[in-house]
Amino acid sequence: MTLNGNETLLKVENLVKYFPIFQGAIIRRKTGNIHAVDGISFEIKQGETLGLVGESGCGKSTTGRTVLQLYRPTSGNVYLAGQNLVTMKGEELRKMRSKMQMIFQDPYASLNSRMTVGEIIAEPMLIHGTANRKEASAKTQELLRLVGLEPEYSNRFPHEFSGGQRQRVGVARALSLQPSLIVCDEPISSLDVSIQAQVVNLLEDLQKQFNLSYLFIAHDLSMVQHISTSVAVMYLGVIVELADQNQLYTSPLHPYTQSLLSAVPIPDPVTEKKRRRHILVGEIPSPANPPSGCRFRTRCPLAAEICTQVRPEFREMTPGHWVACHMAGQSI
Figure 1 (cartoon, rainbow, N blue to C red):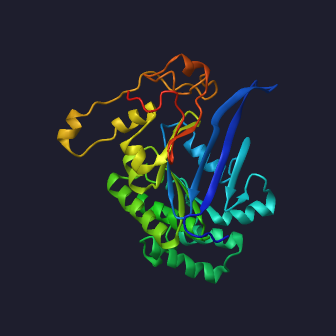
Figure 2: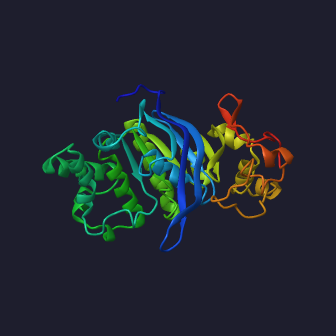
Figure 3: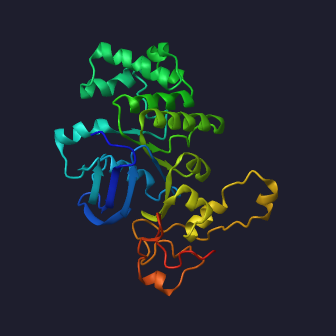
């Protein structure tokens, strides 16, 4: 499963994930669906990072879990190194799981409080049979050193560590099976600002060392810009814009992206004072009953009649810059 540099590692095609809505305490009947992810497509090349950004509840975390088949998709395909994960079951899928791992958002809840750090990191190796107990113990100490922790910490329990140290343990656990793809589900959102940069720098160093590919899920646009090769902007279950990170931050084409970027602080006080904020009005619609046509039209200052009737096509405006908007390129 070795890929050469610049080859596509992960390919997602028209991924859909609906969660059924049931009513009735005794006689339960299905009354609708939560449109968590509604037909998205993207690719990640070997050794690169795709940043997935958007407001809370837009479907970012569901996308990550569905890519890893923790949630089975309603429809669509997910190819890892050319192999379709959606069609796999049982032992075949279990073998593929060693090639894709996850770093969770909450470093406090994602580590078993009854296990030592050494046991937590060694567990995947023992389950997948990639090492015996002696080999797993030695590998655990090596991984702790790799993420900036002392090897002797392996006998300590999670409650003896700070949040940043726990997240480093989560990174070590994700690396234990030598994966090609790691889904980082808002791995820094619960950490202090001073610690966030340390964890991001660690992830970048590990990426260079092991040629890792990341799906980096976050709502902090400035941090996503720092770590990502390309960025996808998500709104209410759909990707509205996808581009190289330089293109997206300098020439955003979708009004939602423009609004998000206008809220990113600029360290220059003179520039910050001159800049105009684009504050969106209204509430995010319910994913159980998304708007017709364009999902963003109920909050978009550029919305026209066509936006209420026709779902915008996700099209390539310039090489590598994709957008789903009838008014793409206009400034709000």
